[in-house]
Length: 105
Image (cartoon, rainbow, N blue to C red; front, top):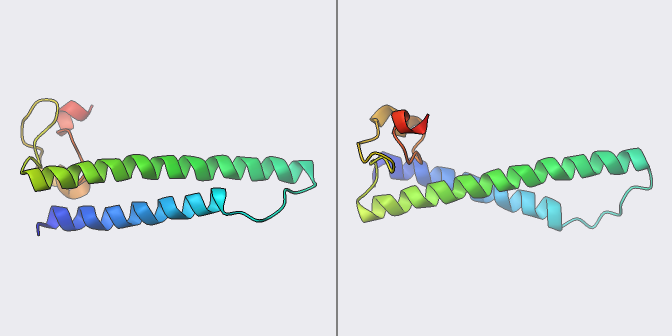
């Protein structure tokens, strides 16, 4: 197993855990809605933030899964835009990167 694959599997686990926690927070609540309007407003804002974190986790998880599939297919490390090899330093920092630094701008 390559170090990139190991990094991606760790990221996959982290994003899956984050997604599970956000979904539990959003859909597993048994608490009644607060009677105080100000508290309701704060609760709704908190829900929005949690939902955004969940959406971000879904997006990142999809990128990680795509990178893992590229490893399985023997296509990992090639830029999706220009086809050139993605710099190793970029992959170390962002193993789910699908584009080289020039194309990512």
